[in-house]
Length: 95
Image (cartoon, rainbow, N blue to C red):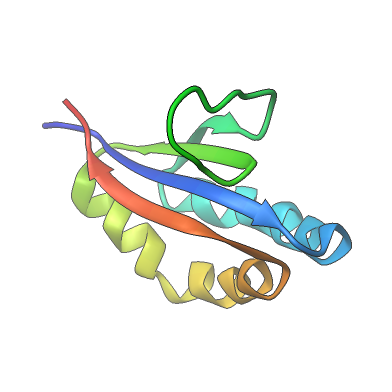
């Protein structure tokens, strides 16, 4: 079964508030089967334009990645992210 991924490209607008999101999302997404593959770090956009922070989470399947994103426990803390950043998040099936 192909794995699933949540991929986020984020521009943090309020680092202090965003820190609260980071502090909580590791436990919540981990409990939902997610494993951080990429979480911030140095990057260089070599074509096009993206936000400055990149995150990739791996899940056992696409369905589990999608369910984790929509999970009420995650959505509760996602409000912190929405209040302190702008960005794009996609759920993708792997190979």
